[in-house]
Length: 328
Length: 131
Image (cartoon, rainbow over all chains, first blue to last red; front, side, top):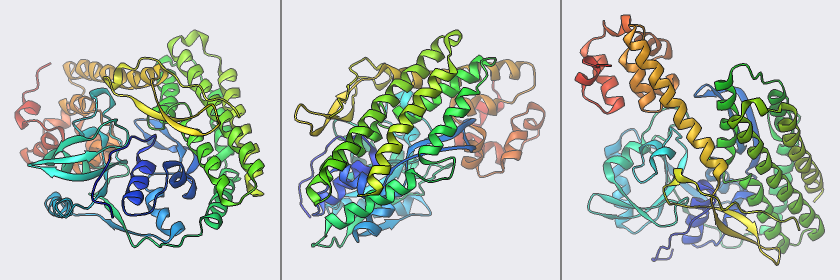
């Protein structure tokens, strides 16, 4: 483990934190590699699970997927701890940072004081790193911020023990025992196949089919209840852009992973083609978000079939990409 | 290789911060780049405004004796019923009852204290809530 810690900004909190942790403890893996190796690209539309009266829509695997899978896929032992109360959790955390150990935490965005006010919602699956302590302030490396920040002990504890969906329960993690001779080429191949399988699942609320189910739902939205429509459309965008990483950012992240995978003895042409298709999907998703926002601004201009078509277009690129990748 | 367009718009919600996304360089490699998205800004603002509207509606309903102050503070803290129930450790149906003024009036100090803690306010602010 290296003593010095350098903060970097990432596109996504969980892959960013895990990438930093692994690199810090001796296995240099980029954010796209972490994201791809854990087969994290996904699409989930679950209308029965409600968040503020809106359905659950995710553009990647559910929270904790990366932390949990990284040990299974790479054979790295990850120490994971949850706590019953804040006092115990804090004692442990302070002990760790005093030993100059870097740890990852799961927190709720709502209670983190350094977040801009309008960004603070009850989203409980935000990941960050703690790398030091100054008085009662923890030194925090939050992957979505440009610079490291300070966070008061009291407030960080509150964020770690927030209640609700995905409640973190003080979740803390760090890697231990990283195997030195990893055969990444085999692991990469397996991970890609696995992701292809999950994106092409016949289950209608996930993967490519899930995108089409959401498109169908959009094409049936009534414009009678303007407020609901506006909230629904912007909710889709928020899940994609804000909680996601901007303009179908997860697609770009996966495309970057495929590009990086070329060094592992796989069919390069195929990887290039699939990577390009995912970039197309990401770009299309951004256009889709733009259409959703335009429609929310001017409800009379709401063209449900046009918006639904955009999403179907993106799903087609992804279907094509993953049919290719399945053969890798 | 398909090109990725990086939005460079203003996003006031981020208060001067910038987020990053992956994009392609001239040589086709990927790199992280800062971006600003007005689409993101609008979506976030809509969510924030929705809570403001819910708060205003709640105030109207408190005036008419239908809703309890708990409803106002729930929205003030950007919570929904499920989140609030989880924070105070009660069943949703029970919290839903407490959101009505008639049931709220019958609550004892102990339960009020739970809610006050959830909203990070004094118990008096709940009891003497003025609209």
